[in-house]
Amino acid sequence: MSEKIQGKGVIAGIAVGRIMLAGQNIDGYLVNYKPADTETEKKKAQDALDAVAEKLQKNIEMLKSKEMLEQAAIMEAHRMLAQDPAMGELIMTKTEELGNAPAAVLKAAEENAAIFESMDDEIFRGRAVDIRDVGKRIAKYILGVKEPELGEDKVVLCGQEIEPSVIAGLPTEKIAGVILGAGSTTCHAVIIAKARAIPTVVGVGDAIDKVADEDPVIVDGETGEILIRPSEEERAGYNEKIQKQQELKAHYAELAALPAVTTDGVRVELMANIGSHMDIDNAKSYGCEGVGLFRSEFVFMGRQDIPTEEDQFKAYKEAVEKCEGKTCVIRTMDIGGDKPLPYLNIPPEENPFLGYRAVRISLQRRDLFMPQIKAILRAGVYGKAAIMVPMVINVSEFKRVKAFIEEAKMELVHEGKEYSDKVEVGIMVETPAAAVMTPVLAKYVDFFSIGTNDLVQYTLAVDRGNASISYLYNHFNPAVLQLIYKTITSARENGIWAGMCGEMASDPNAAVLLLGMGISELSMSAPSIPRVKEKIRSISSLKAKEVLADVLKMEDGDEIKAYLQKVL
Ligand code: PEP
Ligand code: MG
Image (cartoon, rainbow, N blue to C red; front, side, top):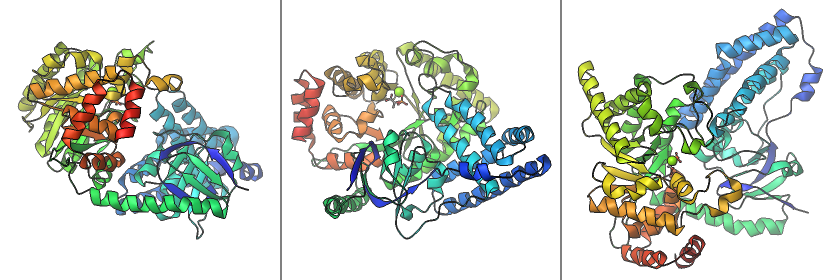
């Protein structure tokens, strides 16, 4: 008899395969381990550190040769952890304390991981998994535990948390799907699965215990449904869905090369949101036409100190070059809110989303802002870079940013460094204040990019991360739509371009409304591009305007959402 469990689908697609329990339990091996004298244990720990680093290095080279750069970067971070002198020292201290190398390694990794786990930021918390992963690898090496072997069948990896290296270390063609008991869209396991388009369900919780090794399963990465030991009938029921999925994949691949243009010839640019230059190759395979949002705070995160101008220049130059003459919009760092930066030592705030963040920090911290601006201006020499300022609420902030940019140019002249004078400077419209003031702001900026993730939360007073009020978080709320419409209209009336880089841009029905409003560009996570492009190519701008006119008469966000689902 089949059993059904439910999670949250985060990467769409149907996976059919046999369960391979990942995140193997090594407790049994530990209990039976007979430690030698302390000196021998220390040597074993050191040998294991070296061997694991070497194995990871081979893995990195294999991934790079297959152009799997994102995965390679994650494995590189693991290799660095294995060779981190502080981590090595801690392991040796613990070995002296415990007289047992594998136990010492696990203890050191656990202590280190706990520090990351206590951080507010989801991305940093995710690093705890990486640290435990590396610790477990080293301990397994000492204990002589074999890595899971693959058979003929495709596997569905399953675990409460799965170490990123387990996914990265297996060939894509062998992994049908991923099931995580915990997990979120930003944990590394999901990032890797996304880069490989592996259907994934997270948040299954304790129901994951119902799944046993080798169980046949069907995983629906869209609905989050998992069928354990499905009957022949149930399998057949999914065949049609699988067939459709394959056709859709082939169709999307064809779409990548086509422009996003309406049936009556109105063109919209579809760009990618990225966190690193390493995301661009993958984004191109989905047909992105440049980068509409490079979240530069990721260049500042996951390190111990402020990146230098040179560090940043390298990161931005790579991104700009990879865009091959198409626009690369680099957002100045948006630290604060839910993205703290421990080395800035910002004291805790009662309302961090309404606090010291983004441009507010940049304008007070010349030591942070000046190198960033100079790095972007220099990267501009290698293509078409643009600077985008987050969280602006008034004209004076923008004027101060412009003054900074002029100063940065003067410094670059003095230093004899080459820079581009053609770098556009725009703002994110993500506060209601900015949206209301767009008729004035449009006289100063080169472009607007609407950040709906924040604009929705600030307009509706609904925390974007609070699950209990998520039913109120609706980008079709008329108050939000009015602000968006005003922003796009202000841009058009002043001869500048307006785009959108918040999640709303990846909603095909929203894209129709935005098209009706006259938007020029939509930027989103790359896998969403084909669906949005398809919608744009299926409709005329006239029809989009008609739909918009109907929507503007409506009074309620849920009504608008339902109406769009009906007519589009
Ligand atoms: C937004 O607020 O819509 C946005 C794109 O920025 P972030 O999600 O990084 O706050
Ligand atoms: Mg934002």
